[in-house]
Amino acid sequence: MIISIASGKGGTGKTTVATNLAVSLGSDVQLLDCDVEEPNAHLFIRPTVEEIKRITIPVPEVDMEKCNLCGKCGEICQFKAIVVIGETVLPFHELCHSCGGCIEVCPEKAITETGRELGIIEKGHRNGLEFIHGILRVGEAMSPPLIKKVREYTRPDRLTIIDAPPGTSCPVIASMKSADFV
View (tube, rainbow, N blue to C red):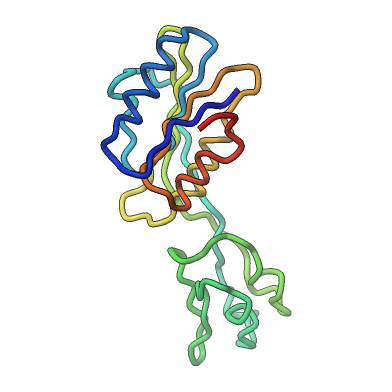
């Protein structure tokens, strides 16, 4: 079962409710702090961190030796994350949503993927409670991909409590997706 603690506003006590609920339910419980921009559940739980994993997303890298400057990569990108200007192709990695469309449409196979770091995930335990949170890289604008990676740690054999980020936008939706109760 997955229970997501959410609110449309910050400072309402989501983390207090999530951490106390997780601790009161005892062992075989997971607490996922999906507020990756400002994770703070660890301050209440104080887990022993056993694993740290760097999280990257694929972004385009252009081999100008192969590129014919056709512009198909820029045409398909909804987010304008890759553009052809004059005799060069400029990928804007911060805008890229990692769909891979530019790679698929490139007739010269001049575009490959490279990793761009989003942040880290820390996993640990405290008194039988499994704790996982993501920490978004400073300056990073896209938190949903990191939240989705945190959510991949959800175990079906455990009760999972999710501390959702504040608001009603994409990060909240990514954290609450497939929750049994909100």
